[in-house]
Length: 316
Image 1 (tube, rainbow, N blue to C red):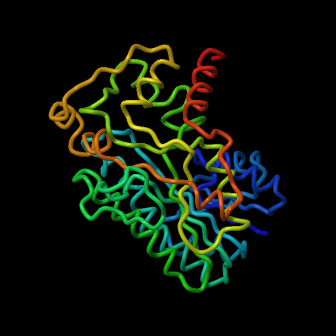
Image 2 (cartoon, one colour):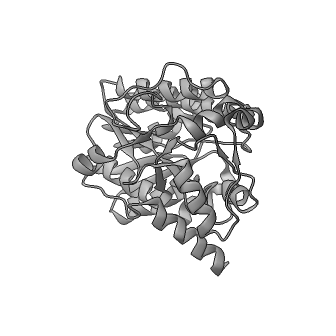
């Protein structure tokens, strides 16, 4: 198939494009900057330079390629500050709203058969069971600092799933870790753990689901080839509470145990979102993706993946 990857040079795009090429697909990688064209070629794809926030440029690019499938992986995340989460995601939120609309409009014009888009697990409603399936709803009251971000994620999902003219597929990825991510060998979050600046807040009962960036790419290839209309959680097999995974991450990195702070202190330091993510977050089940996509994560548990981060740190 001819596959158009929007966001080809991002963390997941760099993992996804070579896998699509290896699977025999003709891949065209869209990038905002002409300077990234050689990188796209090195990944094995034909470069397409276009501004995702310019409807005419997107329409021209998609019209020229005439793809069978579009994969929407557009993000542009600034330096992370939990107290100003929406500010860090401001451009990404535009890419998830305006950018999604531009891609869908261009896709409809050329008759794209399948449209695969990135979403995120962390917006699930924070009541009931600690592990959610695709049938569970997003919460109606996201943390104040991420209301715009959750609204943008909702826009992606609703727009893609309601596009009756194509097979719309939404991938709710877990928290990325691995090369090129903020939880990579030299990533922002990893450094915070090493420097003991990533505390356990309250009881650390928030449940996170992780996915290694390479496993996320493999699942995306499966969705391109075999996905049905709908939502898939793309996460590993072991959702875990912060109180469990954060000390283990510190241990594997050879760092001191993370500090524990009361919830009110965590909230003062990181805003409502930090307290919510540390104490209330719900994880996700990958049973549907395993069953329907024939996919399984190469890193079944974050434990294995975190150990790799430590090994890569030693080699560096």
